[in-house]
Image 1 (cartoon, rainbow, N blue to C red):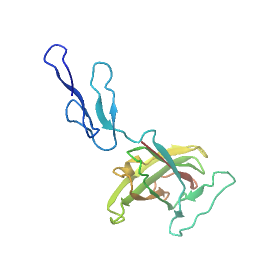
Image 2 (image 1 turned 135 degrees about the vertical axis):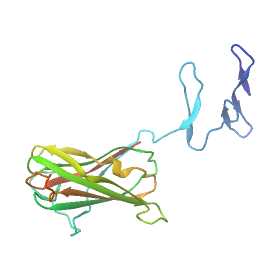
Image 3 (image 1 turned 180 degrees about the vertical axis):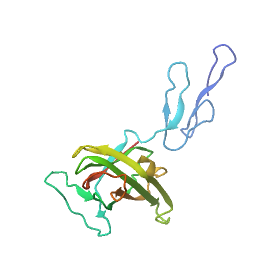
Length: 203
């Protein structure tokens, strides 16, 4: 045991044991995976969760469009985008992925694409997920259809879908459905939404 006292009786600040345990401020050995971090000048060190380190990114492209379960590229650009919806009809795109084991929390989740024509696009996203041994829809979330984005023709947009992924955890299997609400009167885009992919960033 190591004890120090500045203006009073010395108290324990640090210990190590015959088992190789390191204790801070007593028999405080932290838990598996935690790291010892500095509290800065004038503060004690402490065991804290390591988080995801530098984090990571996933770039996903849809694996199915609408009820056809097929994909097709569109236009002459080099992004491999696919049309979702139209000026008068709804359309869906589907994604699925497994959550990496180093996942701690979602820091960014955006659907990336652009409109064939300028205007206001209405959209929504729905999700469900479960872990090994659970029902595939043990958890569900959504960002309802009132979302609108306004952009000029062919301008890349990031549509924030983070709230539809609240609660996902390492090891989960996730399914997402992105819907362009072209049939809604509030949607004024005179063409399809050209979807490039889904970007996920995590810590």
